[in-house]
Image (cartoon, rainbow, N blue to C red; front, side, top):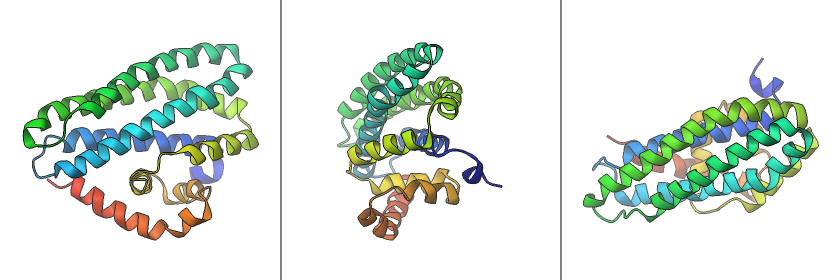
Length: 209
């Protein structure tokens, strides 16, 4: 039996998002110094990732953390520490966003900024998941999660959103991905074949040697 059949949606969606963050930050750090990857493609991934990570952390700090903190004081203390890590990561994301990506001479600084974000994201998730996953299982009802998830979808950045689908397909179990994408508005679901094709092409360029 797959995880998609046994885990609550809060775990499925959060794990998929986190694995996307790991994959995307690693790809950006790997692609930035490679001259075979166009800087225009790297800039699109960089801008997409910065927007997605800012939105993810703001959604946690403003919407999810208060729900969980109200239910468990011990969890609240841990979440406060995670929010401090969000602040550090936001500063690193701002530095990445400000890194020039116009010519090959920019690649070294861009790669350094991307690697800094990658390392912070990976460490942060190592700290977050042991606290967050049990808290979601214990304190988040299916109805509460559905409400939170729809708020996140409604406010999600739209620029290069096709890449989100592509990364989900890269890191997720197909059944879990389908469960998560079922929450999209119908116009977005109807466009999934086009979005997937666009993402596959863009990711192929970014993964080129």
